[in-house]
Amino acid sequence: FPLDILISITGLTSLYLYRRKIAAWRQLALISLVLTFCSGLQALAFWIFIKDFDLIWWGFNLYLLIYPLCVMKVLFTGKYAEKQC
Figure 1: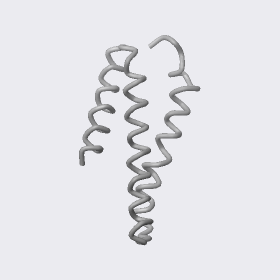
Figure 2 (figure 1 turned 30 degrees about the horizontal axis):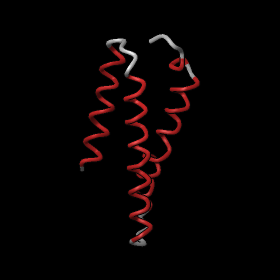
Figure 3 (figure 1 turned 60 degrees about the vertical axis):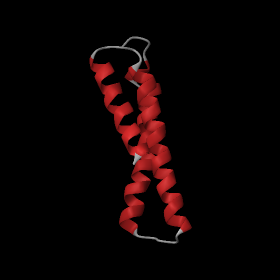
Figure 4 (figure 1 turned 180 degrees about the horizontal axis):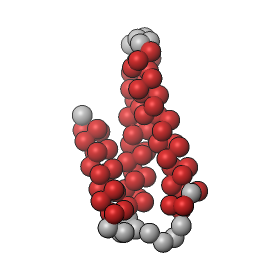
């Protein structure tokens, strides 16, 4: 629960800063994405540890693991990688 709250706070704050054109949004977005990746990895490790292979739970947690990587790629190589906000 604390990890999920921290992910939400950093993600929503980064969106707020982005709309206000404050450059710190990028750092908070990165923190939120890394925490989301960690959340997915932690959940998958748990499901592996207890040997529970429910395809639905695995799908959601794989999503939490993969989508931050895609967003980080866009964040650092796409139009958001520019120096300007």
